[in-house]
Every structure is written in structure tokens, then in C-alpha cells.
Length: 521
Image 1 (spheres, rainbow, N blue to C red):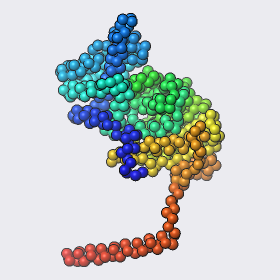
Image 2: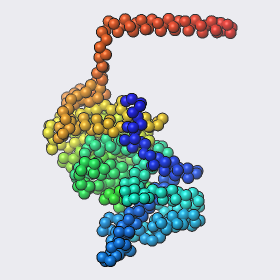
Image 3: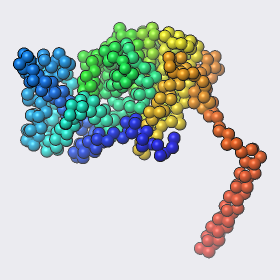
């Protein structure tokens, strides 16, 4: 892609967000010597508090105008009826901002968090409550409150949850980048989530992510439904997360966008304490930890989920794959991220499990991703798409076939170490998949050398059940420049001869200079 188009594409795709970036730069200045992992909860907790307070104040103003009609602005049920959190007086942003310069501000914020959890059962145990600790500079905390107080001021549109939701999402990404590998465990880059969501197209049904991190898959799924004119109530959100602080981040991330969810009553490990045992999902979207070696597999040798083979104790990749399959509804589709090794590894029985999954005709599509997309790892990654029924609800019967897409050459650099897929590239990948499936209005599918290929299971067998797209899509067709071969060879050999002459001249000059210095080569 031409470099000149990078900034506009990046802007469209969310890399350059204007005021969010300015706000981040200002907030990061206030971090002082605090570690990003610790500061994350300070900032995101305050953004959450600002969001629920803004939503509350907007409804509060409406109720004040309806007092003569029997409305009570201080009745919590007036707010809960509209899915708005009740915010007691001591937790309202106006009160906290008025006291931002007081030495007691840390305790006031903690008290506010406690009061909100007390009065809103769905937030119990979710909010950070460590603002009074001596290590947190109270002057900087006050400045941070003043800074966050600038978000959502003005007209109603700017006070909407989307503004604060965008800030929250942007800050999650920035913290993931600042924390490096550790941060990436709770955050999947937005463009990767968008590819999964656009390909799965979750309009209606149950969406499940058993390793949901900060909830980005769910946020993008709801955005997809809204963007395509669907009804948010038509999808149900189910999730699970083993890390307690990440589980809290997910609960706040979904609450800030008003997304109903069932993430279980607390954090829990999906392998050892499946909180949704009976769930059969219509869509599974996930980004499990890559190549996890400490998943406790030695305690699960006889598990009912291992229908296609017992996964190795030293790598959880195929434990995750089979966990996803186990939770799929009869017509369900799963899309998830895995390390590239999952497509070809034959270690510890992984090749046999992959073979069994292929022979069961579950592999719908494989996408090879470009490098540098993730904050957490430089390990190359791919997308798997599994379908229980390759015929159901489609215009094309794709039983016995798998689509391979090689997107490794896509993406633009947004900084020295991170790459991002553009909106156009995401649309091309998703559009290719929908055309292959025969989805209505998706156009006609054709194999494109170097990019996509529909392969039958016989061809996959011949390739030893390796699912690497590069094996199947072939080389990109070279463009014919119209210059006859003989003329091109005469021109190129003449050019090469000239370069040889120049090389010999430079070599002689260097030898002469070295000889003048007393060094003979």
C-alpha cells in the first residue's frame, strides 16, 4: 500500500483518534514513576466513575423537570428502570471534582466506589478501591480528576457513553502497549477483533468468549449489530476470564457501554471451572493465550471435551480449540486467534488432533495474519474459523472444502513496532469469506493466486493436514509490463554490465587509497 495513504487509512481504522490521543498524553504525564499496570486501574476506574455520573446527571436533570408529574430525582428505581446506574450524592463527579484539590481526595474516591458497589449489585467487587494509598500522589490524582472532568462536557452528544467508551477503549490499548507482553493478555488489537467480527457477522444469537480479557470482542460485536441496522437485544453475551483484575476491566468496559452480559459471578479458569457448562453458542470469538504451558492439563486427561484427541500438557492450543468446539451450537461458528504453530505442529499429538478436526469437516477458513499486530508477542498469528454445519443457511454447500486466505502482506505500520490492518483490508478479507460461503449480496468468489484458495479435504490430506494458507494459495500473479522478453533481457544485462564496471572502478579506488596508507589488499 502506498505510504501516502497511511495516515488517512489509519485514521479511519482508529489508529489516530484526535482528542483521545491528546488526553492520553496528558494523563500519561501525570503517571510520574507509577508502573503502567498499576496506573491502569487508577485511570480506568476514574473514567468509569465519570461515565456513570454523566449518565446519572443527564437522567437527573430530566427528572427534575418532571417533578410536577410525580417523578422523584432521588429515587434509585427511576434510574434503574432506564438501565442507568444509581449514583449516591457522595459518588457524583461534581462532588469529587469540587474536592479534587483536597488532601482527602483519595479517600473520597474510595468511598465513592464503595457507595456505587453498595447501591448497584451488578458492580459488586468490580471497581478499584485503592485511591487512598500513600504511594498515590494526591496532587496528581486531583489533576487527573480535573483532566477526566473535561471528557463529555458540552452538548448531549458529547456526553454520550460512546465518547467515554471510545476513551476507555483507546486507553486500554495504550496501557496494553505500555505494559508490553503482560498487557497484551487483556487486550486484543481492535483491527484483529474487527476481522473476526466482520467474518462471523453475529447478528442474532448467543456470543461466547471463554477467555474474554477486557471484553473487546463483545464491544465490537455490538458495534457490528448497530452498524448493520440490527437490534442489540438480539444478541446475548456470555464470557469468562481467569484473571481477577482483567475480569473487573471487562465488567467495567461492558458497563460503560450499557452492554448486558453474563461473565459469571467472578473470575474463573475455563478449563478447570467452566462457568457455562451447558452453553451452546451460536458464535464463539476468542483470543486465548498463545502456547500456554501451565494450563494444568495433567489434571484433565479424561475430560469429555477432548473428543478429537487429548491435548498435550505442555501446550494449551488444542485444549482451547476443543473447548470452543464443545461449546458450539449445531449450526454455530467459531472464530479465534492462535499462534501459527497450531497450523502445522505435529508435536505431542497435536498433528493427530488437527487431522481429526479436519476429517470431521469442521475447518471452515484459515487466515494467515501479518506480523507486528499484537502488543503482547512477536509470535506470528493466524485466525481459525470452525463451522459445525458448512451447508446450513448458506447458498453454497462448502462441505469438504476449506477457504485459505493469506493476509501476511497486509497492514500498515502505526509506529516502529506495531502494524494495523486498514478498514479496506478488513473489508477485503471478510468480503472474500462471505463470497466463498455464498452469503447474500457478497458477490462471486474466485481463487486469487497469492491471496485466497478454496481447497478440498483431499488436497489438505496430501499436504499432511497442514493448514498454513501459503501452502495452498500459491504465488501472486506477476503483472505483465508489456516489454518483450528479449528486449527486457538486453536492457537488464546492459544495466548489469554498467554496474559491474562501476563496482570495479570503486574497488580499484579503495585499493589505491589503502595502499597510500600503507595497507596492501
